[in-house]
Amino acid sequence: MQLHKKLGYATGDLGISISYFAVGFFFMYYLTDIVGMNPMLAGVAFFIGKLWDGINDPLMGIISDRTKSRWGRKRVYILLGSVPFGLSFMLLWMIPASVNETAQFIMAVLSLILFSTAYTMVVVPYMAMVPVMTKNYDERTQITGLRAFFSTLGTILGGGAAMLVSSFTDEVLGLRTITAGFACFAVICLLVASYSIKGVEEETASAAPTEYGYGHYLALIREKNVLILLALKFLGAIATGCLIASLPYFTEHILGDKGISTIGMALYITASAAAIPVWNKLSQKYDKRRLLLFSNIMVALVLCSIGLLVGANTVTPFLIGCVFLGLAMSAYLFIPYSLVPDLVDFYHYKTGERHESVFFGLWITVHQLGVAVAGLILGAVLNLSGYAGTAAVQNGSALLAIKLAFFAIPSLFLIAAVLVLQKYEITRKVYLEARAALEQKK
Image 1 (cartoon, rainbow, N blue to C red):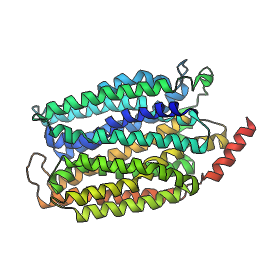
Image 2: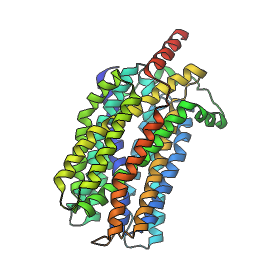
Image 3: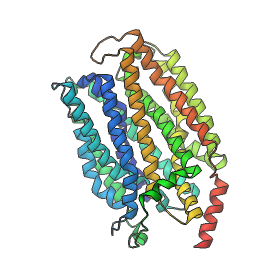
Image 4: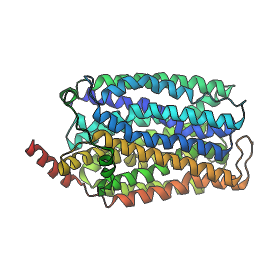
């Protein structure tokens, strides 16, 4: 596949990641410290929104696989869903601080549900394009690596909301101005991706897709390798969701500088992006399961070091820790995504059925459920510790809770995720044998 098409497709992840990480990184903090909601109530609102996101992902996968369109079964949703995606993202940040907490909660839930629906409409078909674009094992890893690179850039911009907002005298006005710019940029990136993959599905768009009952789709998750990848994603999403959402709290109340979170995020992402080619090369030589085991252990060690050694005004050790965290975390940001297209082909080899969108829908589902649980955990931990978002100084219990949410909880779930993966059976050798059998049958 031509490089410019790969790059154009990967650009879509830049727009997706800007919005996704702005929500994951800043929305809980926005609800508790800017809008003024109770942490537990904010966590429940976040949980409901992400729960709906998890429910609608496999449904979107089924809809996409059943779609007949001259624009392709997947590309059509990326094209038509880009503008609703941008508008729904802008709506998230319109919750007024002046209304009562019940009204704030209802608005938070409804806006999250609307954004989740638009997000699913675009992201499930977008991710499911990878197995359609190429059958080559290493080329898929390369495309996933390019996506991971653009995703990291989007993370820097999305995470930059904290620093950009703090530069405005009026935080609310600053937040709404910045997120409107993010929304427009995200729409442009998705349109570029849609244009870049034009024609990829033309050969299959006219063919009537096979329709299965919903019970058949539910049966897919009973396959051992499907369960393992879903468990990996779920546990990892709890870890990363809690880590990202707790970062603004950590930098403001532990370090004493909210804006430094953006610099830390930028260093983390830059180091992560720089390390992607290295991990990509290693993944072509070593077993991906073992690489992730090694990298996740390193991530846990770095997180624990930051959590235990960093305190008030220790900015330099924190920033150094962010660099090492990015180097170690880089493998987790793209290797798991490269496993799903292989699973699609392996299942095709075993059963004769192809379910790209359904598999990616399930993959995103468990990710969103994991993020939902992470928000609920963070809200509960902060609430039990007595955290008060509008208070200038937090009590000792709240500070301890913030530290645990930042390093202990993510470390435990990352280790658990990668231990589960060690039972995954679709290695390079197994995949290549299945791919050869499919080509011979074709």
